Structure formats: structure tokens, C-alpha cells
Amino acid sequence: MKPILILTVLAIAMACNNAKQSERMKYKTTGHIERVDPALDTIIDTDAKAEIIAEGFDWSEGPLWVESEQMLLFSDVPTNTVYKWTEENGTEVYLRPSGYTGSKPSQRKEPGSNGLLLDNEGNLVLCQHGDRRMARMNARLDQPEATFTTLADTYNGKRFNSPNDAVYNHVGELFFTDPPYGLLAQNDDDPAKEIPFNGVYKVKPNGEVILLADSITRPNGIAFFPDQKKLLVACSDPNAANWYVLDAEDNILASPTLFYSATDERDGLKGLPDGLKINKNGTVFASGPGGIWIFNSAGKVLGKIKLDEAASNVALSADEKTVYVTNDMYVLRIKLKP
Image (cartoon, rainbow, N blue to C red; front, side, top):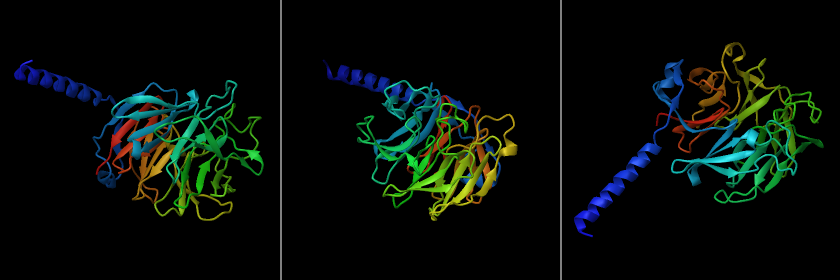
């Protein structure tokens, strides 16, 4: 083949490849940004778009950005599956089963994993609705297998309801919420419910389980403020659609203090306070009525990412320049200001 012809063929091949890559980079968008306070202008552009990077799920949840693998993991709770998304390959099944590992078919509406996180050694930890426990995957992140070690599954000899979301502190203590959404009836009247309340717990490195709060009616999303002395906990109760602050340093049952109430601001809007993340500056990104609420560390609303469908949880990239949102059947990506 002549050199000129070879160069021409290579040029055409490269152009086709670039066109395919460009096509992969185009995503549909949804929602809009609502500016409430001028401080929002330092966080996100008001014309920023929420890109739909994945879709077709029953109820997406628990997003986790894994920097070492350049991948986003997230749960599809009803289908008992964890999915993996990468810019290069899109969406792939990552782990199945993810939350219920029994041999008989589960009758629960939400048997799968919910919140996903990494422990301080980089292992994948899952809030498992179906198995009603906090568990660690016994495999490398790049070679996932549905084998698990139980980190905690009971309090005072009684089984948890269905661990929902969780976070580690720097000394390896695990904090998690335990509402009833993974039970068959998904409420406090479920006959399988063994603990009479819906708790917030801490698991010490030695496995000891400590109850931190039992008065939040539907504890859900949970995250640390930057100093790790305080926790922010969402309550997904329609009659108490609130966020609460909880002391993380004491090992005693405590009374949470109100951070913000959206109970009177949810008319006609889909979603409730659910999953949330807090960046290094103390900015809170919290799923709530109508989309993602953005607060400063004092509980002042700075703005919202308004969405048509209910948002369940959020994740931040390692550089905190991107927020990922699980949005019912969708997974979204929104770019933040550098």
C-alpha cells in the first residue's frame, strides 16, 4: 500500500474514532439550577446542566465515586444489583446479588444494597437491605465477587431493620442509619421488625455497636462535617422532612438538633430528605423535595438543583468538582466550579 494511501486510511480511522468518542460524550440533560443566595455563584454556575449519564433503573441509590478505578458505583435496590459506570464503557453490571444473598427469592420490594462506601483500607462496604446488615465485599475492587463479611447485623441481640446509608471517620469507626425500607412492609408495623425504633448507630473497630439516636423517625442519609465532630442525618419522614445534626464523638444516646426543616416546602415536589454529602468546605449537597438542596454549614439554603424525578442520593468526585446524583431511573452528573 502506498504511503499516501496509508496516511489517508489512518486519518479516516482516527476521524471515525474521534466521532464515536464525541458521540459518547453527548448526554441528554434534565433540570435546572435555582439560585437562592449569591454564595451559590462560587459553587455552581446557574446555567449548569444535569447530564443523564445512565438510565433504565428501577430505583437507583448509593452512588460512590471510586477514584482509583475511575468509576462510579451505584445500587439498583429493587433488582439486587450494583452497577458500574465509566466514561469509556458506560454502564455495566458490577455485583449481583448485592444486598440479599439468600437462596430463596426475596419478597421484599427493596432487597438489594443501598448505600455504598469504602472503608479506610479501600474495601467496598455495603448497606445490605435484604441481609439486614453492614457488610464488606471480600474481593478486590477490580475483581468484584458477591462474597461478604458481616461487619454488624444486630443491636442487643436483635436484627437491624435494613441499613440504609453509612460513613466512616478517620479512625475507622462506621456510622450508619437503619430505617425500615428494606423490610417487606417497609414500615414500623412489619412483623419482621425486631427493634422498636429506627436508629443511628456507630460500629467501633472491635465490632461493638453503639446506639447514637433513636428519635429520628426515618433516619436516612448521613455524612460528617469536615471536623468529623458532628454528623448530618436526613429524615425521610413526610411529616418530619428534616435534617438533623448529631454529635459523633460521644458514645451515648443523644438528642439531635434541627439543621433545617423542609416539611412545609414539599407540596407538589417529588422526593424527601435522603442521601447527602458534605465537601471539605462544609457545603452540603442533600437530596430533598424537588431535587438537590445546597446548604452552607450553618444550614442556610444557597440554591437547588431542581429535578423532575425524586433524587435519592449524591456522590462527589475526589476533586469535588463533580456531583453525581441517583435520580429514580436515572444517574446524573453535574459539573461544579473549580
